[in-house]
Image 1 (cartoon, rainbow, N blue to C red):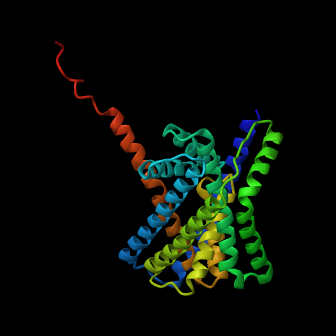
Image 2 (cartoon, rainbow, N blue to C red; image 1 turned 90 degrees about the vertical axis):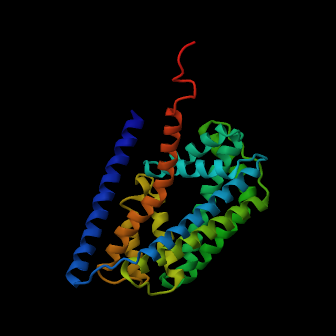
Image 3 (spheres, rainbow, N blue to C red; image 1 turned 45 degrees about the horizontal axis):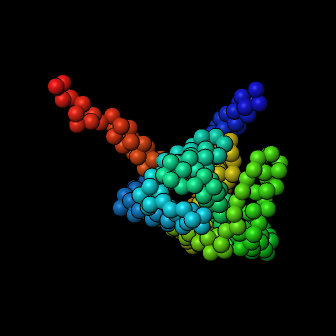
Length: 314
């Protein structure tokens, strides 16, 4: 009964968020139409921005592999990429835990120990979240009303990353006591956390660069410093990620991005709606397409007849 109530609540919140985002984007689109401006997409620049996003994916995949090694386990790069992209599909289910769960299960199927599979998935997601928040505060600090507070909070988040190897085991024991389940997270080497933090920070920076290139490709110009695009993209993405009821951040990321683009002075008028709508479509394709293609390939491979399937009986 409780599960049904939770699912119903998530569904209501998701629908409300999508309706709110649709209203925001539609309003921005109307402003763009009234301005008399026109779009002339620069496809080579959009393609280049997509290549930068895939470079960020590659860095995150390698970062996760190195985190798995902290538990004395190993996964090949090809297998890690397959696990990463297919588990990514879980982001588009309400609750956000599906991605972590799928990553852990698929890693175990590849011979990774259960502790390493689950622990590495949790660590990489936690570090990615903390690194993204810290980077957003640092990159957009001059635009916050309390610039000093934003910088201090960014430093606190970096300190939390530094202490993570020592904090995770007692936090896991505390969580285990609350849930009455035995959760063991071995003490990680400091290098594992720093590698994860550096990899996640590099990926967020590349996302911001790709976003700036995409904006220039869509509306023909991208005014403002790269740091502002990093802050706008990362902040809005994390807003959608933290909203567990919103599949893929849909309905939350869009209003957050529109607000960030205006506050940071990156787009004016209806251009914010155009950038938000097209970037949502762009990122959704880049996130879903690899995983869907891999699943389709697996399905076709399973349906392929064996060499002797059609051989006549002796």
